[in-house]
Length: 263
Image 1 (cartoon, one colour):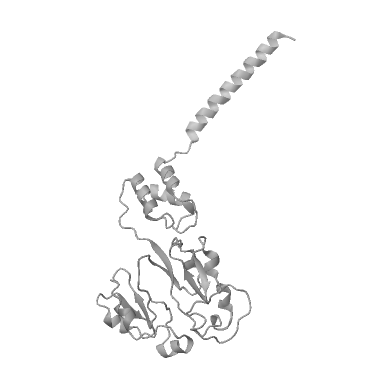
Image 2: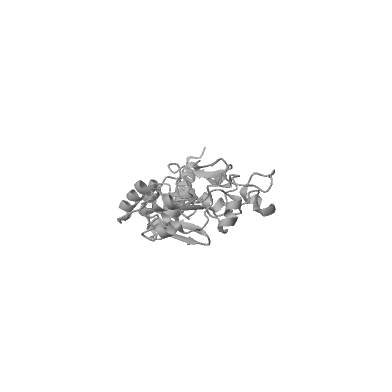
């Protein structure tokens, strides 16, 4: 074997390797993607559920938004106050008085309290019932249909159908809002975890019509509105609503309500 040929081949390979190494090094510097260290640190603190409850496409999207100042440090509904505090420390800002929020179903029309116009047999999905007569078998057009679209949407097993009505486990709920999006009747809203008084009804019918369909529906009598000293209760479109920010939990509204629809 010619030793000269071997040496030449080795030199050629070494030169090519050196050239390629230099090229890759220059290309790496030229085309490298700058990584925001804050974004990486924030992503580490986020729980990783990727539920979308924050309004962004998963935890990566939220981390990028927080790092850019486009989202609040308390934007993650799953992480809660503890997560917000850690992210606030990374960003060097105060988390403020972030309140734990939970989902609340504005309906108390259980099977024994509501009337039905007919028996329904078909696909058990609330959204499908928009295609059936009267929007569902219940006489009340505003009540919970009880077929569990919200249950299927919840990634935390925090909502279940109990006696024909969706009920939320406050301790399991992460306020991701997926149940809100899934409910075709718009019966679910977010309220502060500590809220004690809420109206369990969404019917906009007149009182006399409400009574035809449900024993515990709000009849729009305004008794609760009249006794509230802080103006926390307003009756609009025949149904009462309590503003948690104004409510002092005095309980007078619950005492006065003739149908006992206020928790």
